Image (cartoon, rainbow, N blue to C red; front, side, top):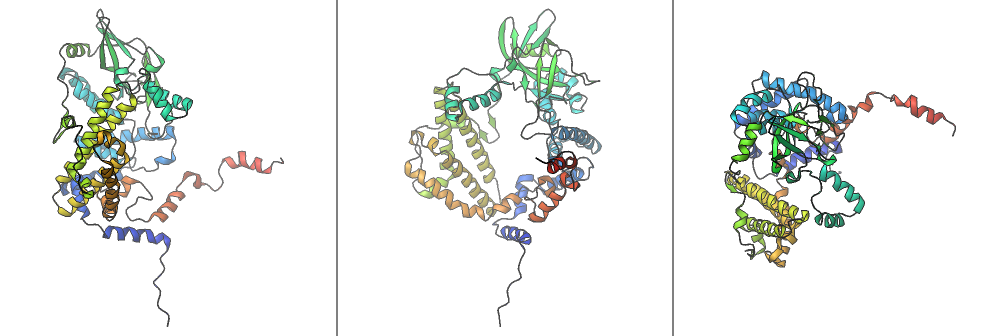
Length: 505
């Protein structure tokens, strides 16, 4: 008698089973990780309620944005902007964190993205009480819409042209490092837009004196905003007093038509953010006066510089380490130790900063120093979060993930960590060995760690990222909804393809 064979499982049904098996290997309870990320169960219940408000809204529930072009996505996003504002008003959602959660649950950036994330905070943080009383209520109630116009045409366009001309990134970097500042891009000190103060009229006269001085890329600037915070060089008594921020009207608040002296529009299609009107603006003899007194007051009575610390972390702590210290690891597993990893990232950040200071005109060295500092900050904050976890199993799993991240970044930039021989060649080989040793430990928790973000299928809007793993049926269903498949014969067939097929060439 033949041995009974197990029932054959179709490939389409295998993926959900494999995902279920992966979840069973987790060494911690996923709800505990969701608690760490999203807070108490009451907070999670509130978050779920807010999500369902979006899901049940006839406009905000839309998830077909990928099938639209730039113009269509922008127009639909305007409708969503209106629906978002009305939802907040109808349900009395006034908490900024809750407003932000609702916004991100919508699933794509809206034309009001910069209005809510940069324009309003700038008014709140940089205006005096008298100005705030006038402008902040208008902005928060959408009586005005705003953009944040800092970035100028400059560097990022020039870089692409130069890259094509040189054909090699190394040659391009060498050339750039030998040049004075080219254009502005996001280099604030290189801003070319000017603001001349006229003492007679007590007005600031804004001008874009060069082609590259026009603001380029700010979200919402092209078609949505009727005001903007515009950064320009203040010229007072013939002296350059540095970059200042100006609140500039762009469009008539009744007709939305562009105001005299303002030239603005959308920069066109780009990779990502197709639903947002990233725009350009240039000014010619535009007069601004509504906050001149405050600006001059700040100029003569400068505020204290902002703090460099965040709760539990001094962002400049790395400056006090010994740049010539040696790694304390005496055994391969020592390179996983938090004190060893954190000190290695501190020394690297300091060493690269010293080198950048010695080559102050080099964009290459400045970029290296910036990335090194950012990675130390990320690693430090990550570890601070791991230490706060109470559950032992979850804490161990997150510590292993933290170690994997740290060793991955260390190995990827090993040469920088070996500057001044902080790591020896032997210790350098331990890094990869320990990274590989961590992979199977983190592997068992890979799916559970992703589940720990607590994201719903609605929020992900992904056929292959769905929670149940039933990806093949989801792919077929998504293809069936493709607009091209709504008709068997596409309209262009009779006009273009049929004549070509029937032609006698």
